[in-house]
Image (cartoon, rainbow, N blue to C red; front, side, top):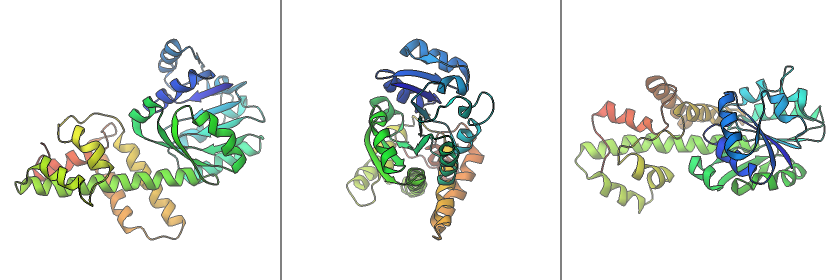
Length: 295
């Protein structure tokens, strides 16, 4: 199948790598050198523009930082709409917002192009292993058409409802991740200051009801060791929490916890900068309290 992939970031690159093993793949990236490097290593073709990438493609996948960037690629002489043919399918794996997904779907429908929002979860490790969770918003027929493509990098592929449902699910998921990160930082800096052995405290927590993906999957190797690898930008998590708050408000649901979480994440982003890793929100709490969570 002729497939185009636009957006070779930390998550997109390994996703595209899996697709290149199974399909005739063309890639595009805003930084052309990254697309050229990927093509040389994978056997895919590198395109100079989005239009060139999608021309002749049966399926197009986008994996960009925000919905705004997906929408920005649609227009202009070198945009997606200038090259995409009727009957094609566009799968947007961006962690975007539900309203943005619906706007893109409406514009593509006018060109007889099907659309699904398909954000993913599982991080760079999940992407490399082809074991991502894929959250899909689409009509039933489009979901069935998309599933074989998504299976190239997804282990769990769930149809959650109409267009926008996948983006809503991803935003809520990441908002809860942010809650856990912030709450862990507060609780464990207090334990550290009180002289409680941090590693033993974590072991107790992970055998108890307060455990989470943050405490089981992230803290042992990244926080207790002081490694702080850059795997996912705090700026993007801040964006996702904001999307979740907007989604709750659109549903008439009060969101005091997530509104506070959004404000705290936004403050952490301002303090740490645009390139900081998302777990550095814990590091910021360490600096504020003068206590390090190590063990």
